[in-house]
Amino acid sequence: GHGSTPASRDVFVVDSPNVTYTDEEILSRYTYRTTIVSKDAASGKYVAKPKETAYEFKTDRKVPRVGMMLVGWGGNNGTTVTAGIIANQRRLVWDTREGPRAANYYGSVIMGSTMKLGTDAATMKDINIPFHDVLPMVHPNDLVIGGWDISGMNLADAMDRAAVLEPTLKAQVKKEMAQMIPLPSIYYPDFIAANQEDRADNVIPGNKASMAHVEKIRQDIRGFKAANNLDKVIVQWTANTERYADVIAGVNDTADNLLKAIEAGHEEVSPSTVFAVACILEGAPFINGSPQNTFVPGCIELAEREGAFVGGDDFKSGQTKMKSALVDFLINAGIRLTSIASYNHLGNNDGRNLSSHRQFRSKEISKSTVVDDMVDANSVLYAPGEHPDHTVVIKYMPAVGDNKRALDEYYAEIFLGGHQTISIFNVCEDSLLASPLIIDLVLVTEMMTRIKWRSTAKGEDYKGFHSVLSILSYMLKAPLTPPSTPVVNALTKQRAALTNIFRACLGLEPESDMTLEHKLF
Ligand code: NAI
Ligand code: DG6
Image 1 (spheres, protein in one colour):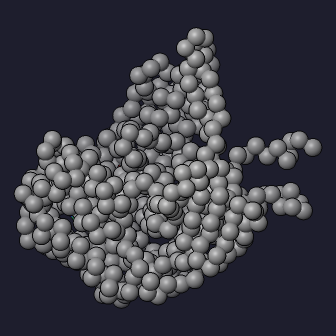
Image 2: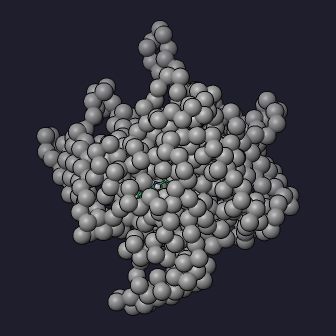
């Protein structure tokens, strides 16, 4: 493709008969080991049987030139991630009352964390490498950024409106961001709070779904790709939280019905679903960073049919990330969590939109489902169907702006009827937590477009992963998974899936943490 750059710095090679490097690809033969369990009818006992499946993975080493288009570009997240990438590109340093601060990518798993590669041959100590160096990934500094917003404000003014960044940083990116103007977007007022109406001065005509809207969004993606000489565009919804769309038989239950409903201008098709459909048809991966049910069944079916990638829902930034770590700890420690009370108040435009009931309801659903898998997995602490009480409250408090306050009380039953109460006061600088996730979602999604697999036994052609990228779960509150597959919310498992799938592409075993080399000698 145009302007392709060579693979990012190779900090290691794998020396294995199962791994081959060519100029273009990394080929790996990988044995996936699982355990299949059945129940023996006579004894009533479980029978656990090890299973091995041989796969081959093929990873394209050429790092493409990638565009990131954000829906809601002029919002708090959109402006913050844009300023952050520019600051990193230009290695900016700015003054704060605590002294100078330099651009970084803290909060990004890919840019800010490491992975254990293995054990040093000489010293037997762990060798850890930056996550970004595991596979040939795009660097965020190389992303070309664009997008849409129903508010036509240029990104410099929108950054001021967001009130997130230090004035000394803003001053250095202002000129460049003033040139960035969001493309007009689609606005169907019934889907977001009525209090957002005064922002909507940059809209494509028409207040319900239409094929003309789908076409316009597709043209926008194509135009952006051509204008910037891009190999690939990835689109992400970081616009307002919408209300749920009703799932109606004959309207959005199948791919064909959804396309017909768009053509007919049905009022239950949301702007985010129209964006998703446009991206699917255009072959641009689409990720939903908000909680609403953008991916109605017909939309998922369309993605599968078109072989397009989708991911969602709802960025998991502060309170919920903490929750999916803490509940994982409590329940796996054998402590019987009995209730979670989660309050937050925030004063940004997201909070304003969520002060409207139907939009709050979307968020309440995504914030409430995040412990289910951990509870269901523990039949020692919980009877079937039994769950801890879980309450989610969100209040709009303009004064605190983007500095969301999240107050959580975890109440648990411990040994012999005792109690453990954990109270957390978590100040989540919302857009500064979400921006690195936006970057990670683009980087991992892009990487997944370059990984192909086949089953060795079947000897079939290489193909891509399933359309629904559940590998993105770590970054998302209500992870979307392929139809009828389980949702994993536990943070450690989500991270393990991400690291171990990357390792498999290099023919490396999952990091088991057994460290037998330090125990058996
Ligand atoms: P924001 O309200 O500052 O930005 C949203 C932007 O979307 C606004 O500029 C608005 O004009 C625009 N918009 C609304 N409808 C649109 C449409 N149909 N097409 C194009 N643009 C449209 O909100 P913020 O703080 O940037 O958050 C964005 C979304 O991300 C929200 O839905 C929020 O719930 C979600 N989110 C945010 C997290 C965070 O930590 N900041 C974490 C999880 C989710
Ligand atoms: C208040 O809950 C507003 C929300 O948009 C959150 O800030 C956002 O969903 C992040 O949620 P969490 O739970 O990951 O901090």
